[in-house]
Image 1 (cartoon, one colour):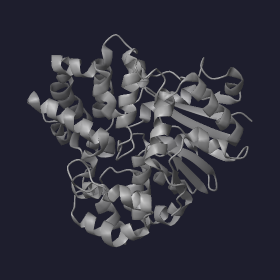
Image 2 (tube, one colour):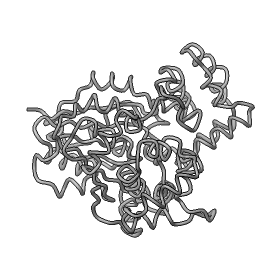
Image 3 (cartoon, rainbow, N blue to C red):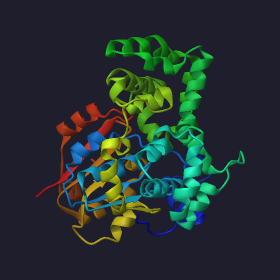
Image 4 (cartoon, one colour):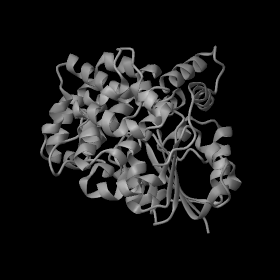
Length: 414
């Protein structure tokens, strides 16, 4: 397992504040950015919410290639190992995500077999997981990561205990989904009912009968009209404005449309994102829908190649600035650009363009549907890239996570 520079709380806070803050602190917008940045230092995503199958098809990763990606929950970076790249460098401004990814790499290398690894990350609700941490994982962790997981939350529990208390109910997003379930139950609705559907027709019927009417409730519309209420989705103030301003119905309408797509456009048997949203877990059984890295058939391959991944608490722009020209084949930006100012976008794309190897590909997602680069990034940089608009729309249509407005693929011109 490869690990890079250690992280400190002060460094992490500074990097995250610099990434999010774009307004004076004492302004309304500045205060919202400050609160979001403070929350985002905690664990947000225990599962990444971008579809790795779509990613890998768009990226066309070839053996021996070099990848730079934002880490988030780490599911996709591990899944990319299936394509046999030479190197995957992951970065994240959130120190909790760094600790989460380093733990995942340690678990992959140290746990004795697939069953133990699946129990740890697939079920993630067994007291045996804490014993496995003590006996197998803890001895191979770096000091900072071990300190994070053995540190205690406000409840007094060690953080590692979340692996026997339903991991996917933790983190900011997991708690947000839990609050959504609570609000639904206030109106007599249990979102888990949707997962009883056995056909696409049943999925749509159950959604329209149970979930859809919730978005007309006064409480729901009031809650979703507050920027801070959606910080649990990892939506910063700037991204909220892009979403809410993208139609006449406000944020409640946007969320209803995204949830409808998640519930109605993909069979539940093939969509682990829907299981996480409506069931707060993964499905069971031999045919369960799981992230690629958690599938039994990929376990040995991913375990053998896990040492090709590194994790750093640094911005992707800063990482690229240290690299030689034409040294990266694939870039995965998630939705990080939705946070950025024009100056930050231009700094990022200067480094991407400089470090892009011949035929390089870059993918990213946006809250709204349009490609945010146009009109904001220097035209001389964008002319070096071919925006695959038609392919991007098709990839977006097939993205099972369903929470974004757009998927975008840029290919370096020859």
